[in-house]
Image (cartoon, rainbow, N blue to C red; front, side):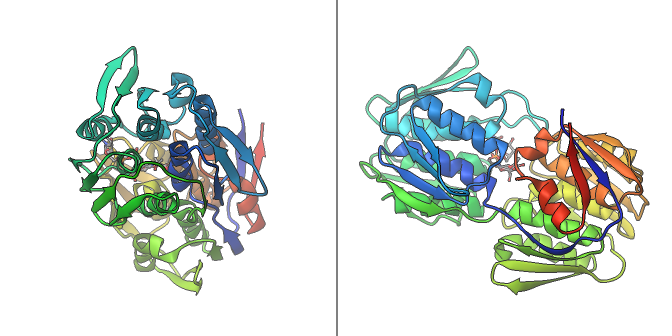
Length: 419
Ligand code: EPU
């Protein structure tokens, strides 16, 4: 199994760039199932979850071609098997994103239930309830969701009891081909939802209000092909900002949309960093003296992203004072804390709150990544630890970061991948 060997201590300096957003690429690829015409997607990151989604599309009968860097062309002329098998779904929960488009286009879909997950139960009941509101008949048998809509889906009101990102995206993709109007209420406002809506609109969908909590969709009979460039990965960019801050470096993080990083930038500023726009698509981070402990509570967008919580916790191990890191989105997203403690961090977990006392001198150790963002936090901690850290199970980080070790090496990190 591949590992990272990291030698800590070097401040990161120079320019580093985020790629296209994994969490935009996944729904964008799923949306290609909605039309028989070719769709060209640009700035698609070469990460493992994207490959899994491409395999799901191929399994359903779509042709997937790779062009020049980051370009993917999908043509779903006819859907042979509107199905997402367990073997693929079990490696990526976002596979449920094909449920809405398969049902809307083929009138039926068979999608494996995802099962457990390292960061919490993550059920998809809200996707199912929403699709039922649009007239789908849904049964669960043999670990699969079997959905049918023999006469097509019909628009209607859908209220989400809690905010769900992929649930909103799934329903958006189902509603664009449903008869009549759908109103999604308490919808997710994440930039990735708006990006998906932008792609669907290019394909001929009629959508208003994406980016707000009420999205109105007028169903159309068919969608056409399109050419779309997905947004920058705010979580990758945020991870790099924290890398600059934790190493006391001077880093320009390019390829990002600063407005998508406002909550993190506010936290970093309060913690003692200078963050400013270096260009419309880049942020410059520098640490001004010592770091201060600042509390954060994760929340839906535009709040502090749960996908940056683990990385922020690594930073707080280096800050003076006590910080409370509260996780409100997932019930079990502190798996990185015991690993950080093995490196010398002083963290106490009380329910949904992690209490971090700092600063502590971290020392290199052998640690195991449990999920994608937890691995990123261990890499960040290793960048400031004394001596060498071995981060095991790097495949987790490869799910969402494209060659992170190459990007970090170019700005001065001592990190390499070994077998
Ligand atoms: N939830 C339900 N029922 C549902 C759906 C969600 O109870 O039917 C709960 C979840 O268990 C969770 C909360 O609602 O407690 C929010 O989950 P959400 O559905 O918003 O998460 P998701 O759509 O499965 C996406 C991202 C995650 C990110 C979350 C929250 C994608 C592909 N994934 O997941 O990204 O953490 O939103 O922002 O967009 C990552 O990239 O590392 C990652 C985990």
